[in-house]
Length: 315
Length: 234
Image (cartoon, rainbow over all chains, first blue to last red; front, side, top):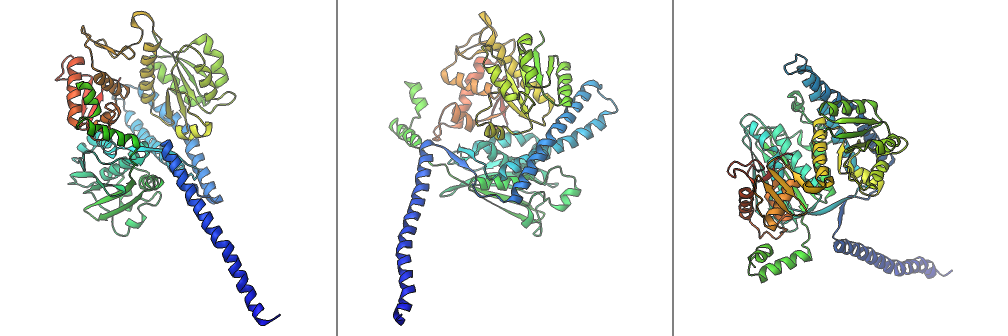
């Protein structure tokens, strides 16, 4: 075999392979992107979006998820029976019965176990790779207002005011309303739990960016030290001195918050100054403006700035 | 007349504790250990409401639910389960046809409140004659959903379409505060930001003048922390 053939052969092979591979790669890439674009377009047309990942799950992960699900499920029945027994005891014993104090103790710890079970179940659900949950355009100010309304009394008892900073009509985000309410709820709850003497305010603010909505919850509470900060999203991690201060909670609040935000394709960050307070900021993708919405806007302009409802009523 | 509750759960402790509690709250309670037993006594008992566990041996809660829904007479159903509703829907592949879904563990007063609310609704749906369709909030205020009429004491004021929609939305969320943003989105059907908070306040004020005996001291529609309104707990 002449020496040039010996050299040319692998060279030629590479060229031939490249000639085959490059178009294949280009075509398959094109197909892939086009497919996902088509899928996205299809979803847009249907007006349906889902959160969730389809990543493969390892055997260890699966075992962990099964275990969590099993625990939360098998624990809920006995817990229900304890809560039932307690409620009956309350009905049976009179007011000012000396045993009431023990009932209070049992009840408060049973409720703590119930919350822990609910949190574990939520976490297991969020970590389930097969999870898909429907997303809809959500008005974040409504979510924040509902959390303020439900927590205002508890906050007032601690001398803390819950305030909203942001536009009256921020653009809507693509989210699952229940879950995102849970996020704001957990963050406000943390702010109230880790408040200090002299804490005055928890501010929940919205500021829209180009593609997303930035939501922040800031408090003037105890804050988190620099050593603790990196572990704050770890499961069952709680700021150590918080444990001795007997603040009720499962330590699953922030991990749940983080996973919900991530399932929405969003991001979350936390910053804190020890002794002065913390601020948690998360970003959620804006909801695409639907055609019907555009149509409504056009009608609004056509009506000379009178909204559809008012317009009809005046007629 | 005591309302008849059929309570179905295969766990003995849960059955007895819920049963005793409901009995002391003034209900007539019948217990069943599984779906089969529940279906057997359905005909003879004709319960006013059914509380159903989902996972049970023999016939499960979902099957019982389907069977009850096949009947002409509307019977409210409350499902209780250790699994969340989303998980269950995913497993079954469709919406569970219950009126209310409660995840274990729950507080018993919560269950009783749900039972009372559903019974009130069922009474207005199943009654006939003059009272047919009238939801009696109390002796003073009565609401007719389909005819879109109300009775407030001796008056029967007429409400505008929007006022009635607003009242229904608040009523459907009775006990829970509704934000102005949600009222604008779901009652005014506006997502463009063209309806102001003031428009909501004005409409609430008009509605209060029509349904409240003393509009300045409301007993049905309350303000909620400056962010919205709440219909009284039923």
